Length: 320
Image 1 (spheres, rainbow, N blue to C red):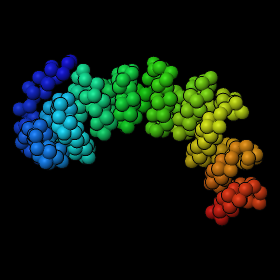
Image 2: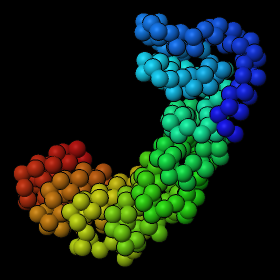
Image 3: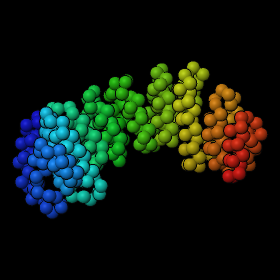
Image 4: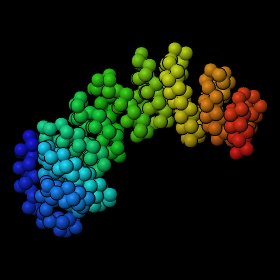
């Protein structure tokens, strides 16, 4: 569907949308005329009040994004934002579904800027039922960044599954972004989908996969992890951070024995090698384990090492 066809469809539904506007508390449709006004004050007032309008205004505002007048473009852009923000505030807002579907309609337009704008606004309002219509844009090199930003913010298993599916079909360059989306969602059901990338020879990708898995509460066995000694300092930082996050997840679900063993190994590493900040983080994590042996470990750290490590250990002992 091209832009002209899409506009025709929306125009055909305009009368019905206008009738329902009153029931939804919307104003009669004078918005576009004010957005196109030569008077900057009129345009400003129009976009500020745009939250009172609904879905039937969106195609016209999208068209206005290509005005030769930058003031009109700005006003149309802000007006679209306000319509979506207003509709998205409440789950049961009667404007929510029509506005979402109007934005979905913009995805079929040929202008990339309109589609980028639509995806960004869909990230604020789209529900799980629209994942299938957004997911194809994960494979569009121009739109995939907006598509993943949108999908990662949609709750539900359909969104998670769309990202997992994209891992197998996307370019290598886009894999870190997909893993970051899974990390942000922290859905344990997707952890194993990230596991194969931990063994990648691309160590940046490997530690990104480790971090994503750690946020999902999982990590592969130690022999599947990258060789710590050949990683760059930045990669080592992500590696250790992932292990610490994993330990916190183990503690949260009650597997304190395994978490304690890992944290004890970290605390036995040379402080100058792994960094005092790592020891401090490990101290904070291990102090959540209520065990006399933990107190012994913390007592040793309170008497040895740098000032910040000793101080952190003392405070951890006081909190136990």
